[in-house]
Image 1 (cartoon, one colour):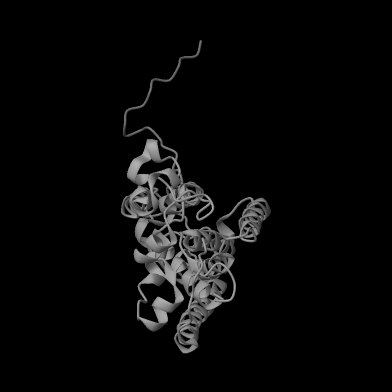
Image 2: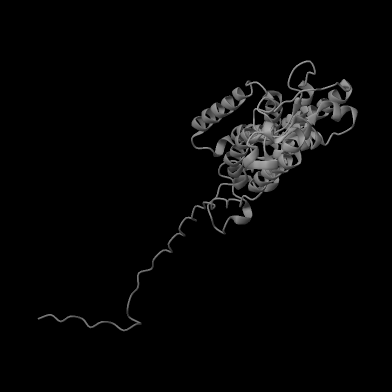
Amino acid sequence: MGKRSPPGDIESMSYEVRKPLSMPPPPSYYPPPPKPWFPWLVPLTFLANIAMFSFTLYENNCPAAIGGNRCLFYPELGRFSFQPFQENPLLGPSISTLKRYGALDKEAVVEHGEGWRLVSCMWLHAGVIHLLANMLSLLFIGIRLEQEFGFLKIGCLYVLSGFGGSLLSSLSINPSENPTISVGASGALFGLLGAMLSELITNWTIYSNKCAAFISLILIIALNLAVGFIPHIDNSAHIGGFVSGFLLGFILLIQPQFGYVNHKYIPAGADVKRKSKHKCYQYFLLIVALILLIFGYASGLTRLYKTGPQVLESNTF
């Protein structure tokens, strides 16, 4: 009867020599999504426009100027009541009040050196209807843009687009036709729309559903531009603001291409294929847009101050 051999001691035990295992592949690295900015500038701009409109109505004081029986909603609104519908169908102050507080008036800009009107006019509105339409558009478009790009870029975009709209509007004013002054934030708002389009183009690689985004944006822009053909609407300000914003979008809203990760955020051993921050076409569009923007502003201001003063008597909203 055989016996089981006793287990050997440590010295007599044999071990299998194993080859060292290869190191596991480094993990892939996916950067966290960017944290959205807190939007405060767009709501503040909204409140500033509301406050400015209320101030112009207060200073307009329709009952004291023409008598309460001619003012719209006089018993209910008192000093804040509106001018007669025949004078201002948008329910707002008089043309003279708008001029006094910064409406775009070509004669005042050229003859009296009041170039500040090219910016101040975007903070005035002709009436309640005008104000509501612009402010709803501002909240709908502006908050999303500020969340994505921050207050500094969107603030510069808003003001510079409004300036571009005012510049083209002043160049398009014809004293022989109505209307001939301009107020409103429409130029700045169209600048935001134009910037959305150029942002889609220059940041094409980061969009997943490109065609749907492009088509929907084009339809929104076309619809808003079509509104400019309604009487008493200053379409030249819309076009000037849109073109300015379109060019500014290539400059201010450029984003890193898809797959780019800043090296300081890459953990040691992560498997990341290094990519350049921007594509060549993004740099090309930025340079071309900057040149066109500077040339457009310079040539527009030169043409404006070479036209000389003209007598203007009507209004544009």
